[in-house]
Length: 298
Image (cartoon, rainbow, N blue to C red; front, side, top):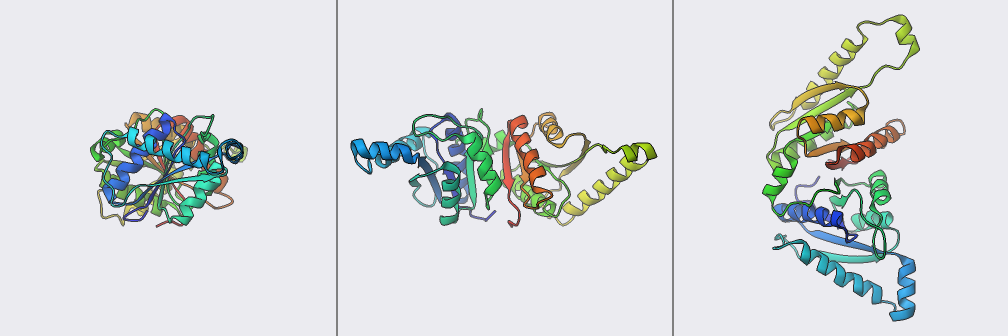
């Protein structure tokens, strides 16, 4: 992520979006960075409103609702370097979020894992999933039960410890470096985890390879050490677990009091769908902040 990230926060007017907004505003205030709030209207609702009240009525109503939502979210709004930008557009939520993030050169999207449905509301379960699949910038996904921080100290208390589950692919170096920076900024310790999946092979079982698991663990330890060797910040604790990746990530997060999980989003045809499914399951199982990193970001 950029040193002074421009932050985009899509708003569906739910309590989950309120928590996401508090994180977005706190991050923007800490970096003295611009913050954009985005509401997306349904085109069919816009057409209906245009027939009864004029072509701009729904946009104007949503703009006022967005202003109220922002002011009611904070007792004292965080100070950002620029005035908060409020935008109202029409279309499908995920494509519009991605379009605005590109056009405004945003460096970070902050959004809730789920929202609410209904009049002028986004359905954030499927929306968040699509944004994660197609984003070119990092996405911080906030859990539905998190009210969000009011100041940076609250972020430290919510995060407590950062976890980076790595698959030891080419993206691991960037993921580890980003996690180290985040942990340093927030002022919390961090962990690196690699999960070794069971070998489900009849051939391996028939051959009776007694040293296979030990060799896989040794190789993973060497690769983890290589990934963190160049770090100049505080070194992490390294963990290796065995089992199904998403379940082990959620278990370690619970056992080690982790509040933020930093995961990679791969674009490789081989790794993409698999890592995407792991990230999706972690979001469902862990109920914690997840920072999802697209490939190729520095």
